[in-house]
Amino acid sequence: MRISLSISLVLCVFFASFENAFSQEDEAGKTGKIAPEYQKEIAQLAQNKQIQAAFQVILSENKRNREDLIMLNEIPAPPYKEEKRAARFAAMLKEAGADSVWIDKVGNVIALRKGKNSNRCVGFDAHLDTVFPIETDVKVKFKGDTLYAPGIGDNTRGLILLPSILRAMEAAKIETQADVLFIGTVGEEGLGDLRGIKYLFNGEGRKIDSWIAVDGGEISRVNTMGLGSYRYRITFRGPGGHSWGAFGLANPQHALGSAIHYFSTSADKYTKSGARTSYNVGRIGGGTSVNSIAFESWMEIDMRSEFPDNLNQVDAILKASVKKALDEHNAMKRMGPALTVDIVKIGDRPSGELPETLPLIQKTMAVSTFFGETPQITRGSTNSNIPISKGIPAVTIGRGGKSGNAHSLNEWWYDFEGHKAIQAALLTLVAEAGLAK
Image (tube, one colour):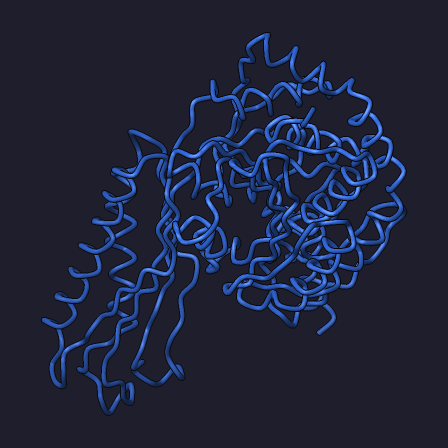
């Protein structure tokens, strides 16, 4: 038992480290080009007395932000179960000085800070949810100055930026031209399928003219390209029965195995050239015992591509592979009813790209440069996918500090100059919303 336990621990550490090396959804970035006029604009804005005062407020709140991070992280928030964290976050935004705070019908927390001219609206967002089940131990543990807990970086740290910036703007009496919505969104992770941001941009509510999301590590990150994805749950069903007595029935497990084989073989050929496209069978399940023919067998699949046409093509390969497996195993059966299959789309994230010449992107890159970083234009799967796909100016920026092991139980975050990311986010937000004279 001790040997098995030791091996299990070693394997857990290995796979957590392996996951950390490959868990980032962003591609390697390319260095952005900034027009001189935007560098000048940001440099001048950063020297404004109110902005400087706000920077000092942020710097003075390191201890408070750390305490808020620990408190908020210890409220579990898996997709579809963000209510308790949302309620606490709403209270934080109200305490920070928002003009009004509410929770919409899908669970997004929204705080309005009115601008001088309400004809424009800027959304400033971090997502509330994490990838971890509700029963996960999310209590923060400490090793020196490093905080360890599931979700501590992604994206609880991102959430902390919002009330911190709001307090700084209030203390420094910064007034913007545009209205600003500080938003904690639901459903960004996994099967949440961007449901919070999709609701905000469904055309029924307040028009949002530009979007800034906080969901990443470094100040240098400027995510302007959405990585599209389709996700499916595919379920083969049959009568099931005893492995000996009912032998000859069509077997859902066998059909599922064939479908995976046909799909991976064809998808491998397709994805070897052209725009980068990926596919992954992430989960499989079904069956009741080793000596039973399963009555149900299922898998969950994630497919991604830079371009919609490629994503649609690999989608077609998947459906053709499933049909081929279904037909083949129904032809093989010796008795009983035929297998059926259900193909259910459980995720749909649109792709898209914005030109780096857009003023919001130029300003964001100029802010990164102002803080001594080289801006990197990246592609990722974040809340910004939705506005990007609609042609609305949007960026996803970093939450700061140092972090690692995202989406794993030993996720960590360390406050290495974390205040700079908050200052950079404030500068980006005010530049986009416009400093009222």
